[in-house]
Length: 266
Image (cartoon, rainbow, N blue to C red; front, side, top):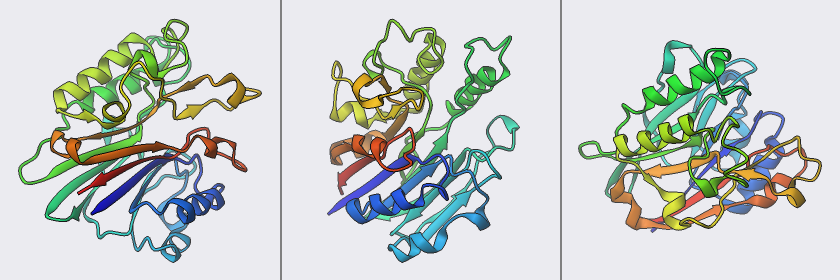
């Protein structure tokens, strides 16, 4: 029995609903996790998703900024939203679904980008990002009777081959040592398994994001792996593949992130 889950920072779900629909028709994931939806729950496009078979939708939205949502063909239970750093931002949502005999807790995150200057003394946004990651370290992958999956735009490319140039990006937010070591510590303390790197080990490059600032993003190919799929270790053996739909970066009115889909045999 296969099961698929997609994570995608859509950068305004209402603006980009046509490409969401295009993706769904073509790929049909069982669960779609969206970040940076940039709308409140009443404004979220529930009906177009229901028309495509996603009857179970939970949304943690915010006017004009942030926001995360889960749209699922499978029933969702125990809807939970964590207020990280006490900021009141809509950056996390989670729920439990069942596949076969397994109960799985799914977390969907949008970690703060952190601004441009990697110094919390002059850039509060960077401090917020570091504090957010620190709070995430309390999240455990292993829970009694429940497996875990964590996805989202985590805004950190933690490994050397998660960026186009490790050396040139060491002082650029998303790949600074304080961020990358923080994420590695988060993974270790939480007992998480990095499924993308299980499927595609280093030194092969993995990118999920290409900047809007690039005149020709495809030719330059200066990407970063900012979007992640993690799980509790018990799910690792069931991973069949990870699909990164790079071509979506070139669709009409694209997000700067592309869909990442994990396919399991459970």
